[in-house]
Image (cartoon, rainbow, N blue to C red; front, side, top):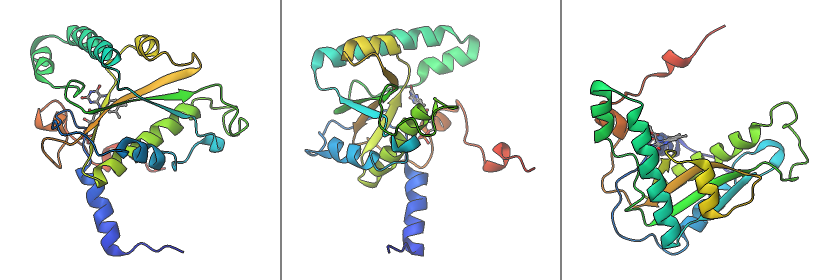
Amino acid sequence: MVEFDDTFRQHLRELFVWRRDVRRFRADPLPAGAIDRLIETACLSPSVGLSQPWRFVTVDDAARRRAIIDNFTACNADALNCYSGERAARYATLKLSGLEQAPGHLAVFADKASDIGHGLGRATMPETTEYSVVGAITAMWLAARAESIGIGWVSILNPDRIHAVLDVPDTWKFIAYLCIGYPEVECDQPELEQAKWEHRRGADEFTLRR
Ligand SMILES: Cc1cc2c(cc1C)N(C[C@H](O)[C@H](O)[C@H](O)COP(=O)(O)O)c1[nH]c(=O)[nH]c(=O)c1N2
C-alpha cells in the first residue's frame, strides 16, 4: 500500500500550478528516451472499458515537420481573419505554437475502430474514446513538467491534412499535436493571461449546486 503525505500533496499542487502550455523552447535536445517514457506514463491513464484508444506518432522527418508547420501557418492566418479590430491586433501578437523550435514533435490520435475493451462504456457515448485520449495527454503534460519538460498543444491545424502528412489509418481521429522540449522560462501564469487575451477564473464560476 502506497501512502502520499502532506509534503507530496503540496508538491503535487505545485505541479498543477506550474504546468504550462509551452510555446517557447530552448534549443537543447531532450534526453534519449524522454518521449517514450512520457508515452509510457500516459498509458497508465484511465480509458473507457480499458480500451487504451491513444495512438502516438513521433514526428522526426524534416519534410513532414515542415508540412505541419506550413499547415499551422495557413490555419493561423485563417484564424486571424475571424477577428477584427483590437482583438485581431492582439491575436496577431500571440505566439501560438513552438513548432519551429521544439526538439520533440508528437501527434496523438484516438483509434475509433479498436476492439480493445470490447465496446464497454462506449455504446451510448462513443465520444468517450476521445475523452480517454485527452485524459492521457493531460497526464503526460503533468509528468513532463515533473521532469522540467514543457509541452505545447497545437490545435490550429487541419485534421485531414495532418492525416495525410503522417499517413495514419483512416479510423484514427486526430486529437492533438504536441511540441515537446525544455521551456525558455518557467511561469505560474498562463501565457494567454500574460498577453491579456484571457484570464484564469476560479472554480465558483463553473460550479452549480443543486
Ligand atoms: C484542447 C487544447 C487545444 C489547445 C490548447 C489547449 C488545449 C487543452 N492550447 C493551450 C491553451 O492555450 C492553454 O492551455 C491555456 O491558455 C491555459 O494555459 P496553461 O496551459 O495553464 O499554461 C493551445 N495553445 C496554443 O498556443 N495553440 C493552440 O493551438 C492550443 N490549442
